[in-house]
Length: 210
Length: 210
Image (cartoon, rainbow over all chains, first blue to last red; front, side):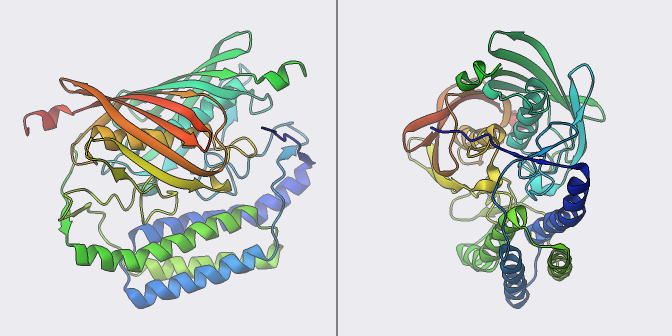
């Protein structure tokens, strides 16, 4: 197995230019996901919608970029624009915007719509797992600047997580050799709904690189 | 907390009619998610794409259904059309199509595109968790026919999961009172990449209902 962690550095100006271009586009796709999930239009309108979506897809495919990770030159952090949890350019992502504190902890406040629903009215348990796996990974990898892979993650569901505004938090408990132990919570306005513990591992190929 | 598990029963004919209408629409949205994630078009084309997407969203919003769960009258199983793991109508879902065996186990074969990428070339660990949480839940709840909520789930990442064709499997190990213990695996062509163990709980409100 080969892993390519090559990347392109981008400036703050270029970051802002691309963000202004693509963030509203991704937001429009998110709203389309939700509208298509709940639409009750008939066959003609559904076919018309499909044809128009395919035309937009063709337009966007006229120029495609190589999927080289971008790293911001000011922060040294990957943008992770394609990431399904935090990706500014991935309509699958809520997206989570991650805030890193000086003590190494991180948090995010975001809203989960009905597109993330499992049991009626509640967030799908696997989406809670996605959100927490990502946030614990951010804490363990110092904002994705260190190559760390999830070794194990355990989630304890304390009660249902309602759709709507949520907060997630994560921090590193300790590090032992190549293992980093992280913990985190998903919370609604009344407190924790899911607790997570994860062990993240520094891969062998990165150990000599320091 | 109130939970409404009311549902509408639909016939096989109506299922096929709605599926023919909405499955291709959702597939078109999935391709759009991918194209918008990787596009390198300039400001004019991006603005044009956004305007056209917003027009399709408005068209689909002209008729919206109430989000009442649908249950197929032949199988007695919820369609889970809006589900972010298996939803035929949710463009966030790969989607997984779940096969239930007579012995209670279940499996699914599906393909994860770059829209589910974490580290370059690999499936996001949280997406592996979403897939396995869902499949273990299917096994524990007899195809979502029993109300069961995830109590805990633990995932062990054996190695990286490559993007592309994958298989997931799950089965019930044992049941003790209100707890059902399930196990499952995510696999590529070379075998297991992630192992999962979950405890699923029959909620108090459903215990008397038998």
